[in-house]
Amino acid sequence: MTVSLTKEQLLRLSVASVGVTSMISLASYFMATRPLTEQAFARQRQLLEINRNRIAAWWGQEVNRIGSDLQNQELVGRSLLILQSRRQLRSNKNNPLSLGLQTLLEPHAANRNSVSLLTKGGIVVFSTDPQRLGMYQPLKNTTTSVDLVDLAMTPLNFFTDSFSGRPSISVALPITTAQQTRAGFLAIDLNLRRLNGQVTSQLKGGSTQINKGPDVDAYLAARTSLDRITVISPPSFLTEQQAARFGFVPLESKGLRRALEGASGEGLYLNSQSQPVIGVYQYLPNFRSALMVESLQYQVYESARRLSLLILVIGLMLSLIPVLLAWRQAPSGPDPVPEQP
Image 1 (cartoon, rainbow, N blue to C red):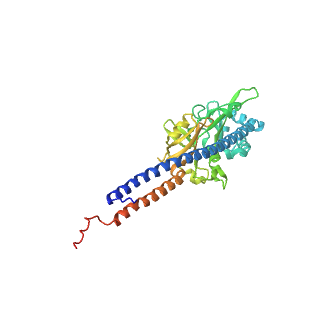
Image 2 (image 1 turned 45 degrees about the horizontal axis):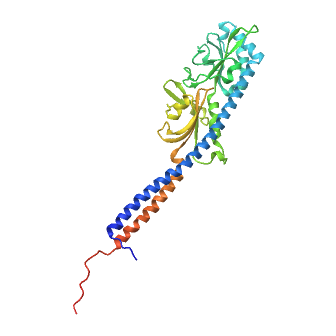
Image 3 (image 1 turned 90 degrees about the vertical axis):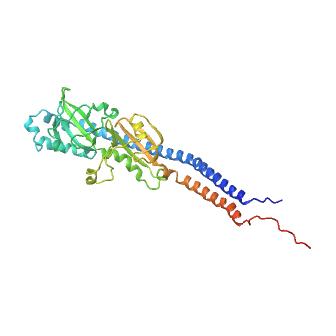
């Protein structure tokens, strides 16, 4: 028994097969994206944890370096002499006390933009950056005034430095006399490029498992004002000249907002360039910053798109078979009249 289909039926079958193929292709795409999303989240969580630990280790080392400075009797002694000296001596950056203090601070200079001595009223009487000499440096809202014992766990103020115009974190630690009277502060402006480098350098790996898969963008961002979020510093791979010209463009995304509200999590959202991303984020209270790890969705889902496209192409090719059969089918006509004998 054979089934014969008319041309109209063959064309309807072709159209129906196209619809079914499209539905199967779409369903296969969404089914394939689920494990890819979980794989991306797992990889990002691993990378976020690595970077968080690197940042914590860097900060722990810097806290120890600051502690060693404050326990250096020669450094503290010179600082007290400068703080207690006359204004004329303070204003001379080339006096022996200032030159000697600068030499003592030199070993730890790489992690600091500058180190200054502040009076109790916040006036800079010594600085490794001579241009700051005589300026006023607020000890509230911007610079974080903190005792050494609390430094490691104290949330530090993140602000835009009025002098450099760049995002900054500064800490001011008290310097006391032998009678435990506060004479002034040792103010340290952290080198945020070094802090930022703890994140970006981890992405330079070779063939390790963490670097297999779609590209990952990991960065630190913070609020420099109530309505402005930026990265904390120029990328660490830029030269000093390039970093000086770096533009801090505003950032905005759902993940950033949630992280800077103190939340940690993951999700699918639009990044600051309005590109769909998969991201994980964590708030770092020490620096009032958001640690972000993101991947572009189109890269993560590339294999799912290929599978979906393959199913669609095969289905479309199969749907052409009824069309070809209908085209080759001879037009139907009346039965031939039998010849008369």
